[in-house]
Length: 293
Image (spheres, rainbow, N blue to C red):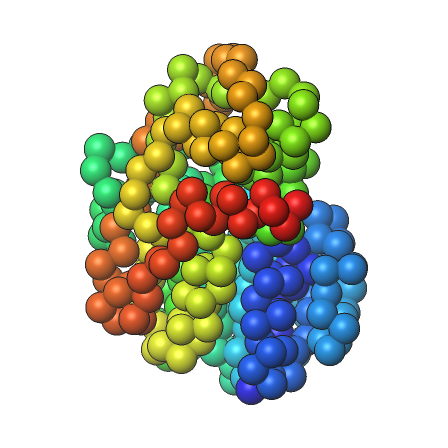
């Protein structure tokens, strides 16, 4: 298969590229390196520097569109920029796929698109994002659905829970696992925003890559990709302490604008239609991430 991965020098994208190369696919990486790293790009893949805010052309069978502005804080401070990357960038990816007759797999967000939930969110749950990032991803999904209807395409949107694992950057606020592990290992102070009871569904990057590969073989639809397990940020911090082998209680600060109070995804549909079920337990995944750091 010929695959194009936008954002292929980033955290999730580079891990996907490795998996594609390992199974013998021909891979092109499109990335402007604003948050990605050139040294993360598999040497067997072709690298094309490009900003997805500008149109591009491809020669591929499948497009994995992972390029994104994924920092909630940045989205609240610079919503126009966030929309340019996440909405205009997605339209450009859809048009590139249409011109090439390619299948597209879009990386959306479950953690931000549903907003604060009262129970595990299903794909048909209300979409009530509380951040500009969530709003932009919701808008981008409307384009994906629209292109499917207007142009008889069969693109797939995957709504990721909070992804973590090796190569995640501690420079972005969404990488809370990377932040905690890096600071604990350096014996630096850590901070929890809110009272520690905010919950998230943390899914390992290896599980996410598996879902992306499965989606490439599926004809259309929207799917949650998570574990279905809620973890408080306070409990997450304790797991990170255990993985690093230090006891260092965090400080607390006011919750930030745009942060959902409760987030967890139901993955029944992904299990039934894609054959996807997360397999990496959180404690195991954090320990492996700490060891790889």
